[in-house]
Image 1: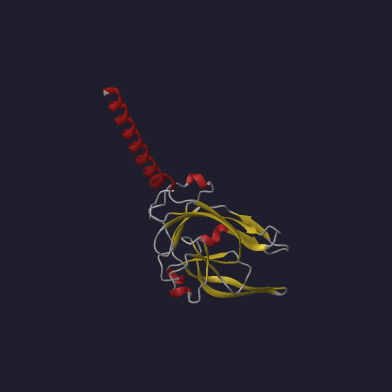
Image 2: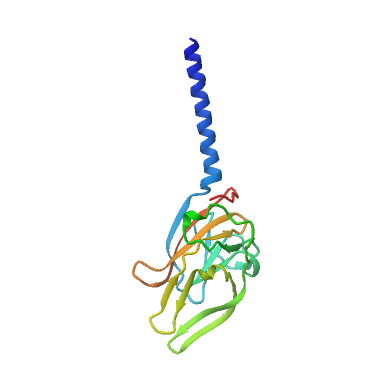
Length: 203
């Protein structure tokens, strides 16, 4: 009887320890689930495409500077976040300078930059380009270099891993890695991200 009691006690303790470790590991080590979003259509020169990390989908936005439903937006190779000059949210970004996804395990404590007004291309014709001054993230838009000096355009992917804050201040690890569709068409953005819904800084 004594041996049976000891065995039951050990089993209960082991189960409690496993559950505790599993929960701690999930919150402190792995953060949110890693998701891969392929071929987001950002081909328009005039319209931005707005995306919610918490919803994992494109959202419809009519007044982007006064709307908290979106976190990040895409326009060709440009990106904007819901913060700074682009919105009323807490969005901002830092470039970790890492290109290895697994090397970034925690959000930096400082270095975040908010969106500012800058020059973007709003039309591309056979005789040249048209530009406009709009808010966007100069930090995130460094993910790609597009050389149009000699056709066809040449694309250089820098594969930086960024950490961004969402409209409500949650942390996201982000890597934008492709500009082409499955048919090799330009301005189709593929990216992966890890969204920490609980506000954790660990990835």
